[in-house]
Length: 130
Image (cartoon, rainbow, N blue to C red; front, top):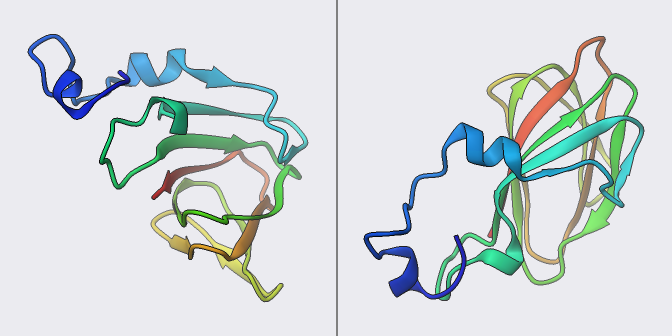
């Protein structure tokens, strides 16, 4: 879905994103990723309804040894919620933090962050940009 709040709340556009719809919006060539993996999005910044505090929701899979390079969020923050696997989260100060299922990592507006899969199975996490 995209467009205005009225379009999102109409009878024809659902505010619920099914797993099938999310799996259909797959990105394999993310510029920040190093190594194999992919991302699936419920919606991206270009599809956000006017007035939404959430700019993007995505599910990222990083294969063992892959990472998302350190990057800055100039106009928004981002939250990672780890669903499976294990890895290291890099914060704005360059420190690393172990992450595993159930952990939440927060990057504030203007800060930098990155994440690496240090385990032997895919690292899967949900990213919410707001």
